[in-house]
Amino acid sequence: MHYRLDLVLKPVEGALVRVIGMTERRGFAPRAIQGSPASDGRWRLQLVVDGGRPAETLRRQLQKVYDCESVQIVPVDGPLPGQADAPTGAAP
Image 1 (cartoon, one colour):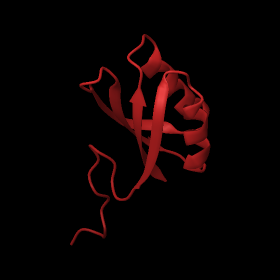
Image 2: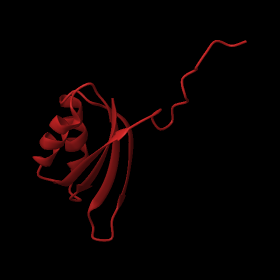
Image 3: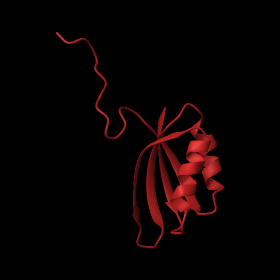
């Protein structure tokens, strides 16, 4: 199952590495990442992950990371960013 994590991080050294590391250690594979600084100085990050475990497990663990201020999870339907749709049938 694919999920998009919407995170708000404190802009401190190592915050991104801690989030990605925690994601991988919990059995989720990062597939796409996008982020930018907000006007308040914090980082807004979208991380698309793939995994067979419940996403709530990952959300609870990421909320324990000191630099992570909030986490929301949205299921993603369809192909991941940068991937083409899978073929639907045989070629004529």
